Image 1 (cartoon, rainbow, N blue to C red):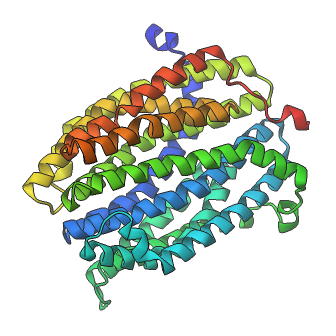
Image 2 (image 1 turned 45 degrees about the vertical axis):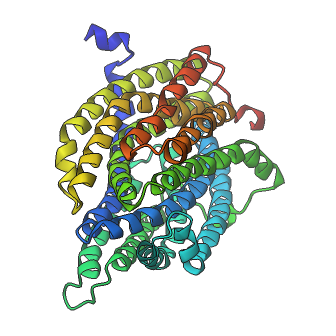
Image 3 (image 1 turned 180 degrees about the vertical axis):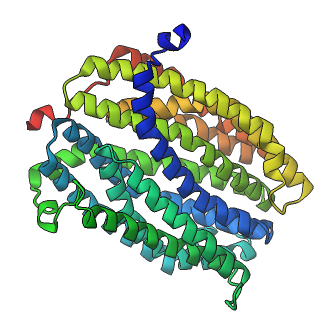
Length: 456
């Protein structure tokens, strides 16, 4: 007990943190399960199908993080404004983020529908994979618009401490997705067997169901964030200027981050379809477990943002220290779990023995790096962004990916022609770099920046 107190794990603090983090983690797990469900069902069809859906989802990741950057940029303000209980200003930031998110999602929807083959060909020239991936992208394109609106409302709900509503919305989505995937992929109950396109159709309907649930809950229950159209559009140039000053680096960072992840996929694809399938399976599992670190980090950003908005800077610093310790220990536990169950995970997919062996080894490497990765996630997403120190977070993220990870990935794939297992180990070296850069910043307290004090 004394050991836990030394790390800052007071009973009340853990209770508050978990009240925020658990619904966020559950929502993210449910959302990621939707993707995992696609992969498990598609995984019964073969390695070409796994690769096609995986490469299609790389484009989705570019879209998702572009829109996520907009939502989270607004969320930085909204969490601090909630600390001041300035509801009207929260409505304005919600409205502006909805407009930007819708415009961005419309652009990506058009690309996915009209340029699907060209998008897949950025990753592979395998005609079978390209044809399957093109089918998936066209069928899933409309879901991008639904997701962007859901995301904006999820962020404002979380910023005001209401993390359960988005979680319930995601649960509705996965129920729809699971049922429709079963029917449309395999052709059950008299429906045609659409294969990968069926998975995309199921996902699209699931995203719509999730959006309708969230909007119904917010407006029919007259939730505190149930802004009218007039209230959401009541922003001026001053708000737009403030938004872009803080949020544009976040948007840029998320786009560049996912660009780096996409670059990794290109590097993996240079080693062939088998390597692509290996990394698609392993990355899907990795993303499932990363959710725990991200959930803690998002909860940290809310707690820290609320404290700074309420001018409780010392409490914000103490919370940051405690959450960092808690998240890193959680990473140790989760890493151990991944390491132990990696052989069982590989058995879930219809893949060759060689691919199965590679998946197991890659998962074990992932497991070793989980505690280090969680530390970096909590610092960048939770402490630095929640504290308003957006620029430092961005520089760290971009240097880690584009200064360390991506160069090593392409050197390993093109110059040294390393096997996929060795190549992935090189990519993971970006994680220790982030620890070295963020730890001194955490201790310095320079990351504590009150973004609302100027506008009081």
